[in-house]
Amino acid sequence: MPDGMAQDQPSAARQQADPQALEAENTSLKDRLLRALADAENTRRHAERTAEEARRYAIADFARELLTVADNLKRAIAAADSQGREGRDDSLVEGVRATERMLRAVFERFGIRKIDALGAPFDPARHEALMEVEDHTHLPGTVVRVVDDGYMIRDRLLRPARVVVARRRPRPLSSSDSAAAHASFPTASARTETERSPRRF
Image (cartoon, rainbow, N blue to C red):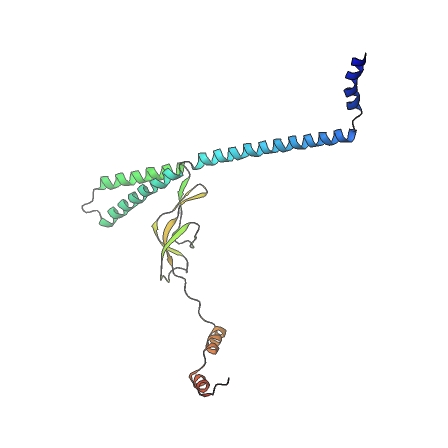
């Protein structure tokens, strides 16, 4: 009988525990569970984004190397067109054109597109200025020549376009600027008068 009474004492103690303490412990456990679930969800979403970016941009390095091939094909076609039809192997030139078209189609299939830089305002996020030139037929800061085409892979820059930009013209001095500049430099007579005046210490 005493043993049975001893076993009933912990149960009676639990029943007599403070209900507020039990409720606070229950709330704490729920909060910890919700935090753990939120962390797990954030980890899952981050993993999905990382996998998606890896899938979409995995070919970026390889595509960047192929841009040199595209540049050389374009130069070969331009050189053939500049020579005229005399002494030119038309079948060879057409083969180069076909290869260039196939490469351009492959680029488009994988989300690689050329940046239309010619005639556009200079954009440091997409253009690389090689030099500035005087060109009064374009607005200052406009791309007047494209040396090497730039490319985007989906919404990311693959290679900036290397361009020549119209030089920005200096701003003409206004009448107030001219007056301020004139006032900052004393005239010859004023300088002479200052030199003649005795110094006071």
